[in-house]
Every structure is written in C-alpha cells, then in structure tokens.
Image 1 (cartoon, each protein chain N blue to C red):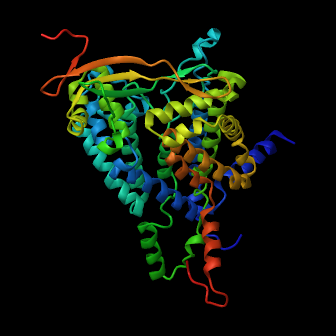
Image 2 (cartoon, rainbow over the protein chains, first blue to last red; image 1 turned 60 degrees about the horizontal axis):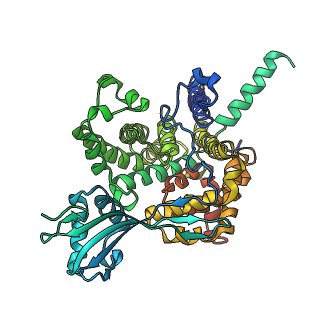
Image 3 (tube, rainbow over the protein chains, first blue to last red; image 1 turned 180 degrees about the vertical axis):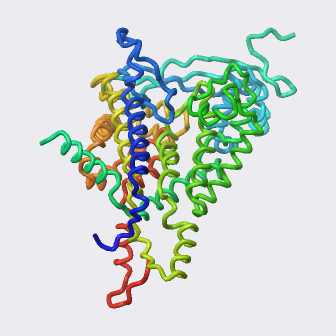
Length: 181
Length: 330
C-alpha cells in the first residue's frame, strides 16, 4: 500500500465492532421503515400484530408513500379565484403581481381568509385591492375547477361561488346573503 | 469450506467493505456541504423555507398540550429532562441559537466531532419538535441520518481547524505530514456507504409505494398530471401548469420516475453507474422543485456521499498544473 496515512490505532477491533453495530442499526431501521416491515397494510388483518411502528414512529427512518395514489381521467382539481365587481357590475381584476402580493400570501391569507371569513387574514390584501380600485363594492370567492379529460386534455369545470361579500363603508366585508340592517 | 473459514471470509469482506482506508477528504467535503447547507437554512430561512423556524416555533409552542405528540427521537433526546418534558418557546430559541453556533464551529472544524454532535442533536431536536404536532415531512430524513452519523466518524480529519493545528504540531515535531488528498482513514468511508444504502432503500420504498399501491395505473399519465397540476396550482408554479398540458411528456416522466427510483439500487453494485444516476437524480429533484415546489434540495447535497471528491480534486489539480512546473503541495 502506498504511504497511505492509516492510523492503525484507530482501527481497533472494539471501535470496528461499535461502528458495525451502528451501521446495522441504521440500515436495519431504514429497511424496516422503508419497506413497512413493522407497519403492514391494514387490509392484511392477520399481520395486525406487526403494526407496531407506523410512520412517523421511527422518524427520520420512514417510508415514502407520497404521490402514490393513482388517478384516472375525469378527476377534477379545485382552483380558487377571487373576483371583484364595481357597483355597476364591472369586473375589477385582482392583479396579484402588480399589487406585490406573493402567491403564498394570496393563497394562505386572502383566499383562506375569505373562505373562513377571517378579517385579520384577508383585510391587508383587500386594502391593497381597494386602494387600486376604490369603486370595488362586491367580492366573490369562486371555485373554478380544472377537469382532466381522457387523452390528457384539461378543461374548465363548472364554476361555483363559495362566498359572496358586499363591501361596507369601513372597508370590511359583509356576507352578501345577510340582510342589511 | 469449514464453518469457521466461512465466517472469517464474511468478516474479511465486511471489514474490507466498511473499513478499507478511504480518503478523509471525501468525508470532509460531505461535512462541509451538509453542515454548510443546513446552517444556511437556519441562518437565512427565507431563502429556502416557506415559514421560517422562529415563526413556526412560536406557532407550535402556542398549541395546546393535547396537540403535542412527541416523536420517539425527540423523547430520546430529551430523556434526561423527564418523560413529560415539552419544549417552551424560550427553550426552542436557545436550541436554535445552539444549532447556529455549533454549526459554524463544526463547519470550520474546531473540536469538529463534538461540534458536529451538538449541531446534529440540536437540529434533530428542532425538526423532530416541529413534526410532533401531527404533521411530518420527508425532506429532512436523509440529511438528518447523515448528520447523526458524522460525529461517529473522523469528519474533521482534513479541511478543518483541527487538522490545521495537528499538521502544524506534526511539522514542528518533525513528523511526516501527508498531502491532504492522500490522507486516508479506515473510518472515513463507512458513513458515506451507509448513506448510499439509505438512498437506495428510500428510492426503492418510493417506487414500491407507487407500484404496489396502485399497480400500473400509476403510470397512466393522469396520475402524474394531476399531481403536477395540483402542486403547481397550489404553489403558483407556471412551469408546472405548462408541463401539465403536455400529456405525452407527463406519461414519459411517470415512467422515468418509477424506473429511476426502482433501479437506483444498482449504483450500490456498480458504483460507476453513479455517473448516470446522480445527474438523473439532480434533474429529477430540480424538476420536482421547479414544477411542484417540493424542496428536496438537501438530498442533492447528500448525493455528495456518492462522489469521490479526492479524485475529482486530483483531476482538477492535474488539469490546472502546468507541464514542467513544480508539483504544488495541495
């Protein structure tokens, strides 16, 4: 062997044994978790006693079932949009990028806030919209699904209005179905 | 062949596979890459994560006790603090700070193994705590395993302050000092080999989940098309939306995913296949990130366990070395 700098004192049998145990432990745990050896499917009822370490019990050792469910043609995907109107019924676009609202903020604050009617979530983004379009008087949250057709074509599904709001003078939103006082 | 000689043969094979002297440089590059990236995520979380750790800690710490279901690894780490221990926000912030400090120290390689151990424990503590409220993710798994292995290896043998000090001492004492790229250690190779096997199992597990769970239906194109579109719409990826409109490409990518994941294990038997599989893996994970924003970038850093960095460095050095010029000491 070329003058490889090998510290033989480090290669003691005791240390090798300890590292060997660690290697076996790590690979063993990953194999058990990865192949679900201690978490067989519920459908196999006779293996139920083996279901003792289902994820995430052994984390960071785990299986990887993400995106494993199969889908067929005809399935539809929900897509949420927020649309606004003036008093005269003209559509007022929500220009996310122009307003400087990130996709995440739009989705997690604005859409979610409108969906659960949480003013603290939707109000900051709504105020940006109102500042650009003072004539904004009505806001709707609609579900605009995409349907996957045979052959992979994507088409718009049937639009459904999930929430409809009127804008109050103080800038808050009032459920359009509620009777005005 | 007698029983004893069979056992000896297996033991010899085992020792040769796991403990043959390997370049310390390779392991040191893995240490720097892995800890460097993790440290970057801790210090500049907005660059990678959607919700920064401090904000996430505050959210979790405010949740009721009934929501807290500690992962066993977190219970193991906090065992000295008692079985009922639940970290407070203040404790989490302290551990976060400890992770940052120990990460810097482990990165530069001062008291390397101790610092790497503190960093690995602190980071695992933070991640495991985050996953102790009913939701867990897979992105951090391989890197966590790799981080937890590093302190058991001579990961600071070169490219570290420890190594620099040791070499200075050796020079002063007149002891021979080897060039960095030639330093080998019987314990420098095993963590990287373990991670290679972990990767093989992980990919095989992913392929098995798809094929055993859904059969060949998974490859019908509609499945991947839906996942791409779902992720792209949710995360706002124009590339993902555009890809979803190319059905034949989607079908091909579905086949590629399953073939790649199920055959990655071949790299263990034929290491040269890494030249094919690593670039494909990089494309695979970058593609996933671009289309559905699943950030498995840390896995690409963990791919460093497959790369013979010392040989790469030797080749680079010999390429840039002028003919006839005196050989520089690396």
